[in-house]
Image (tube, rainbow, N blue to C red; front, side, top):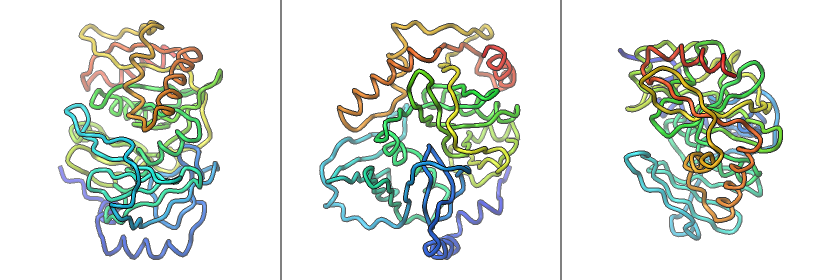
Length: 326
């Protein structure tokens, strides 16, 4: 099945991307929100929501000499569980992030700015922006990143945590098709307190090609396809704004061969199970603060294990089960 769309053609037409970028460079303004940031930029974006927030300046291109990026903080090597590859350096107040062969992302958390590399595929570049670079910014702000999807159900957020390839994005797509608002599909930004909040991330949904073959994603426009994902942007009327949403519950996805079962996660195991979902954080201070945040999350928010079949034909039933439960 061929999925060629006008937006996909745009995102892969390098000459038009260069022309578009040049045009927007002279028209920088606040253009939308993501993760609680009001994005100020002259660049084109596909996944922003309406609303306001703390200023974040985003520009391009970054022109970095590989020998002038400072001290290596952390290096991520690809594994069978995660294909992510990257290196993070620090010099003065700036962080220099290299992800695969995508060039340098320059993050200044004090100035609240991110400079992007030159890249022909603007959709993919924006998706990389809203991964680790934005995470480093809201981590510095005091919020907690969790490798989780989040959806809004009756005004509250349901956070769905799981490792990569464990079905959380497919389940998030099921919620979208059932008429619920997607808050985030891969990284959830949590503001931990007695009234813990989920701050909406990019309005994007990236599903496996086999999932896209079997279901039509409602309220979304396809922007392109890579080897392992089909990329969708939520339509404007399905995005909502960037205001924080109260978190009602966190569920951790488990497998089951005998129907659905929701069990309160034992308090002695919650932090252990959540810790792998907080990413490889760059400093000891970050890791200590994240650990404390997970302890508080377990204090303030109900956390449960959802045992469910992973069959595609059970997707709608899984959504219904969770909505009824919470």
